[in-house]
Image 1 (spheres, rainbow, N blue to C red):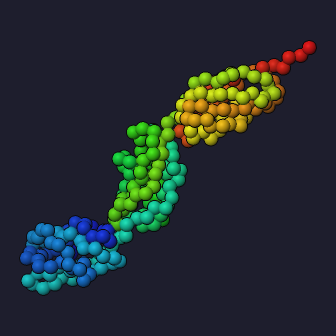
Image 2 (image 1 turned 120 degrees about the vertical axis):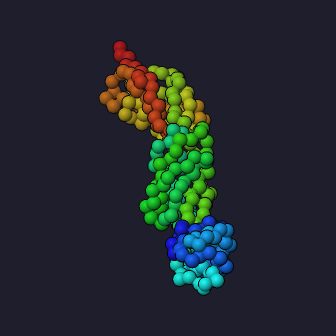
Image 3 (image 1 turned 45 degrees about the vertical axis):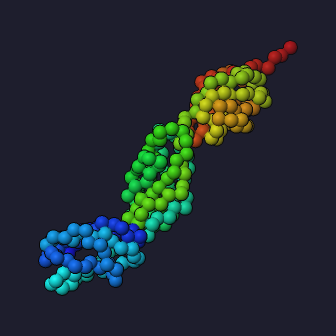
Length: 250
């Protein structure tokens, strides 16, 4: 007499099919001491809606011919999520997020807003999931669905890939120290700005403006330098975007 599925939410309300023989005319189905609502019945199956419960309980079917042998049903508590990392990424999706919590071993889906992804269960306390593409750069709620139910309460922020528009000024001495305003988009999560391979001190003014101070060139020599802005959403490159000038001599 298989019970399918043989696990479900501790809150009840799940549809379960019990199959076997001589089941017609079923008068009661019990999950432990609690009766379940019978919704369909044939000679080989009984369909019920589970009552609430906890732990592992015996399931029995009672007909005019008696009561069946018991089979186990496992109640699963609703999942609890404590952390999500990283909490932001590109709007195109594709990066891997780790979710920590409890009751995650039966997870079947993780939703980022309206978009669902299939998780990989690491343990009852951890999931990993590849983030689906987002509709726009914005925060979305994250929900985890398990046999125990659905839980939410975490947020993930989709971030656009940054772009660099202009640098003003776009030249300065090879000794560094030039204050440069970088205009573009997607700067609010900026992590670093580099001139060549050298990081520059930066201030995020707003999502479209950065203020940086140019570092000196490694060898003190003049010449063009690539400028890279790295954010949670990716990397923007201004090839030869800043020119280091030679120091005058007399």
